[in-house]
Image 1 (cartoon, rainbow, N blue to C red):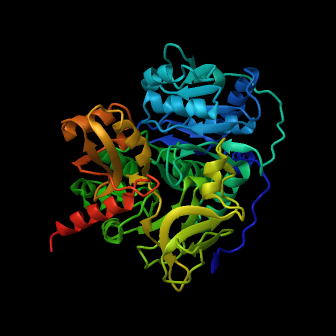
Image 2 (spheres, rainbow, N blue to C red; image 1 turned 60 degrees about the vertical axis):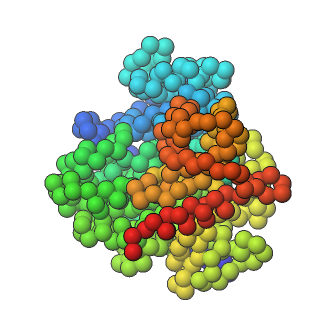
Image 3 (cartoon, rainbow, N blue to C red; image 1 turned 180 degrees about the vertical axis):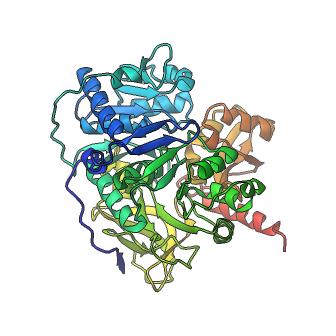
Length: 524
């Protein structure tokens, strides 16, 4: 059967005028506040800054269809750059701020980015990464050798220009995702994709003008981009930004800025539920904790809700769906804490038998398939990968296993896809295996998720050795070549990696072995 959310009208509008439709009315109100320094950016300054930066980029020849990369933590100026590029009909490729120079360079080359915007602390990686790429100029928030200050763009006079944007076809964002397997791919999201998902999400979250929303989830991540940056600004709320998560600073920002909504990931829920430091702060302003990016344990959700005396709701989505597909409404009393909620408005969902492809009814576990206006156009320059995840009828095959109950509320129970979710970040096993195989002592390797209470999952490597080497040496070898969230945390030596007749790694066998071991050591 097909589960459908309520009907919703999606405006036929480019992203910028849609999100900033209240900027004139709210021109003196804070759109963003730096949670650590208190710096403010009003709605008027946000809209004006986006026009000035767009004018400066236009004079440099940036045009519709070009790609602009942002490699930065959350700053109050981040949306200025994002909306400037979007208003020119360009696509913003957002880059994980933890990426190494190699990983950044791969994304710059694959996306064909013409410009790169970063921060002084990232310039060493940026300079290295732009080699052999199409990047013509590096911009920087602040000042750094070899880069043009972003303030120069902000100081530009505003040009009177119009760009003919087709919301259904023209790209506005190009985040990278590993999809259901393999290496990261450019997810082509149109103006309509993001406008649709903001509209759909607001029907569930009911954000109100003037509310304070925490912006600790990174804007480069689709969760931070859509649910925090675009949705909060569309609603006329104020985003209180943080460049990174540090518990004491996080708690102080919640307290001092009287944040009402905290959109976070499960590892932060763990801290809110368990860390003794929480009791030192007044968090009475927090009415809703919304957890996304990875599954949330029901007991942890209940513990967090009791401790903060607030709602703890969940949602579900993926980069390829802009991202939200399921969410618990903010205006209902929710007792199914372990559920990701029903399908959001304007979205269809079905649960499919992974063997036969037949649609399943309530209570039966199968792969979750999604269809709706928020589903991506496809992967950049990768038809094979697109066809693997997006079928001819428009169904997005999520790679996650779950079911609906009799009320149409969904539960995620397992992952068919091979990705590891470390604190909400995607870690593709294939990338880590490829690196391990370059080590002279490794004959073969497989990487799987190992359960971890704090992180959800951590990457664990099974290796077949051809000469002696310590687990610590192998972990250090990989750590030098990847972003911190991709580091291998556990290594086990094995005689043979289980594989199919075609040579495909049978990770499921290793996952079952690991789960059995974990279960065996649990206290009774």
